[in-house]
Image (cartoon, rainbow, N blue to C red; front, top):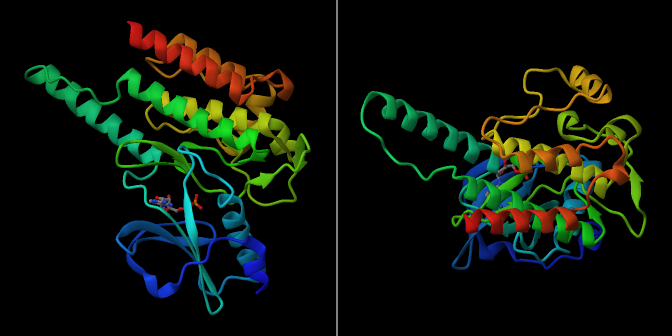
Length: 295
Ligand code: ADP
C-alpha cells in the first residue's frame, strides 16, 4: 500500500502482461521485453530480494517518469504490483542505447573506409553530420522539457539515451533524478556519481542544478561526435576531476564542427550560471540544423 501511494501511477494488471527476453540490467532492476495486449513494451522488474531503500528508489523512479509526456523522454505506460514486487511498464525502444549505437556506427564506418582503400568506394550515409546533429537536438529538446518542468536528471550520458526503431532519442534512467520543487538547486545525499560526466560543483559539493545537467549534456555532445567514445576514457576518475578543476577540457573529437565544439566548451564553463541553459542551447541547435539543411 505504501509503495502504491509512493508513485500514484496507472496500475496495470499482471495477467495482461507477458514477459519475453531480457534486454538489460540496471542498478535497481532488470529490463525485459514484453507484451501488453497487442503492444510491445519494456518492463523493468524490481530486483529479487531488494532492500526497502532500493524498493523506494525503484518506485521513486516510476513516480518521476509518470510525470513526463514528451517525445524525447521514455514514456511510462504504468506499473504492476504483484505481492511484494513491482514492475514499471514503459515503451519499448528497439534500437537500444545511444552509446552502443554510436559504437556500431563507428565500426561500420571503419569497415567502409577499409574497403574504400582496398577495393572500390562504397558510399555510406551512416553517421552523417546531419544524423549526429539531429541526435544532439533531440536530446536537447527532451532536456529543455525536463528542466522547464523543474526536474534535473543528474545522470545524463549517451548510455542513458535510448533509441526507437525510427531513431528517435528518448532520455531514460531517472534513477538519480529529482524534482527541484521551485528551488534552483539541490544537494544530493550520497550515492555513486558518474564523475566523468558530472559538473565539478556536483562532484565536489554535491550541488546539482539544471546547469549541472548542462555540463553532462556537453559530455553527451562529445560522445556523439566521437562516435561513442566516453569522456576521459583513459583517465582515472580522480585524475579526470583534477584536470577539470585545473581548467583542462576535452579536445574536439576528430571531424567535430567548430560550432559544436564551441557548445561543449560553453557547457563546461566552471561557473554554473555562465553555462547556457537548455532553452538557449536548443535555439542554437535548431539554427545549426537549418544551416546544415541550407548547405
Ligand atoms: P541503468 O543500467 O542505467 O540503471 P536501466 O536499468 O534503465 O539502466 O536499463 C538497463 C538496460 O535495459 C539499458 O541499458 C537498456 O539497454 C535496457 N532498457 C532499459 N529501458 C529500455 C526500454 N524502454 N526499451 C529498450 N531497452 C531498455
